[in-house]
Image (cartoon, each protein chain N blue to C red):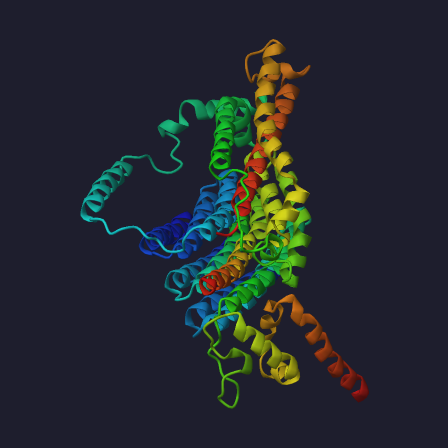
Length: 171
Length: 98
Length: 330
C-alpha cells in the first residue's frame, strides 16, 4: 500500500515537473507575447495541480495535505486572474497579436493601431455588430471586451440577446 | 523518494532559469511581467517540494503566503498601464488646448 | 550535494539578474527584475533553513515593494535619465573591493561547521536555555523577542522613523488638479473597478490574506512567523483592496487616522511592556516578572511585543501606500 502511494506520488510529481518544464520551454520558444502567455499560464496551473497532488499523497493524515490543498486553491484562483489582468494591460497599451486566421488575413479586432483610445471605440462598434463571427475566429478577442469603457455595456447586452433567442429557437 | 523530489525540483529550477531568461530578453515590458509572474508560481512550487525534501512540512506556510501575495504585483501593473493611458490622453488634451 | 546544486542554480541566476538590473535603462524593467531578485533571495534563504527571513523577504521584497515602486514610477519618469559619467574609476574600485571580499570568504568556515566561531559562544547557550527559560519551539522567535528584545525594539523604531520620513516628504497634501475634475479622473486612474474578474477575485481573497496574516502573527512561536511577516501580510491584503476598489474606498475601509495611530501604537506598546516590567520589579524588557510564573511571563511578553511589531509594520506599509497613491497623477 505504501509502495503504491509512493509510485503514484512519483508519477504525479514527475509528470508535473515535465509540464512545468514544457511551460518554460514554450515561454522561450513562442513567437510573440500572447502565445507565450498562453504557454505560461496553462502549464503553471496544470503543473502546479499535479505537483501539489503528488505531494498531498505523501503527506499522510496530518494538517499538511490541507495546507497543500489551500495552496492549490489559491494558485488556481489567482494564476488565471493574473494572466487575465496582464493580457488586459497589454491590450490597453496597444500590444496586438501578429497571428492570422485561416485565410491569412489579420484578425478583425487586431489591426495594429498607434493611439489606444479612438480605434478602440471603432473596433468596439465592429465587435458588437459582428459578434458571432468574431467569437468564432479567435478567443483572443475576448480579453479586449472588458477593456472597453462602461458606456459600451448596453450595446453588448443588446447584441447578446438576438444570439440567445436564435439558440432557443434551434433547441 | 528523495530522488523524485530532487528531479522535480531540478525541473522547476530549470523552468525558473528559462523564466529569468525571458525576463532579461523579452522585448516588450509585458514579457518581463509574465516572467515575474511565472517565476513567482514556480517559487511556490519549489518551496513546497523543498519543504518535503528537507523533511520539514511545517515550512509550507511560506509557500501559502507567497501564493496569496504573488498576484498583487500584476494588479499593480494593470493599474499602472491603465492610469498611464489616461495620463497620456490628458496630456494630449492639454497640448491640444494650448 | 543537493544543496550545492540548488545553490549553484539560484546564485548564478542572482548574479545574472543583478547585472540585468544594472544594465537596463527602463526603470519598469528594473522594478520587475528586482521582484525576481527578491524571490531568488527568498528561495536561497529557504534552502539555508532560515524560514522566518525567507517569509519576510518574499512578502515584503516581492509583494509590497513592487507595488510601492510602481506607485513611485507612476509619479515620476519611466526612463533612467542619468547623465553619462566616466565608468572606469567606479568599475576599478568595485572590482578591487569585490576581489578583497571574495578572497576573505576563502578564509570563512564551511557552512554548518560545528567548530566555527559563530557556533561557539552565544548560540549554543541560546539553543540550550530556550526550552528551560522560555519554552517556545521556535528558537528564532525566542532570540528575537526575548533574548535580543532590545534590538527588536530598535528595529521597530527604525520602521517607525521610516514612516515619519515618508509622511514628511509626501505628506497628506492634496495635489491641485485644476483642469480635470477629480471624480472623473479618479474613476479611471485609481482603481480596477470596471475589470470584473480582478475585482471579484481580489475582493474575495482579501479576507483570506488578512486571516493568514493573523495566523502567522500568533503562530510565530511555533513555526516561521512573527510580527514583521504578519504586519506585511495584513498590509498586503489592505493594499490589494485599495488597488482594486480605489484609494478613496480603501481609505474608507482603513481610515488614515487609524493606520497612523497603529504605527505609533505598536511602538508604544512595545516600550510599555518594558516599562511595565520595570515597574513590576524586573529590568527593562525582562518578561519573567510579568506573571506569576517566569515562563508564563515570557510567553505573555513575547505575545504582546509581537503584536506591537505587527501593528507598527502593518500601519507603516498602509500609510506609505496611501501617501503614494494620494499624490495622484501629475
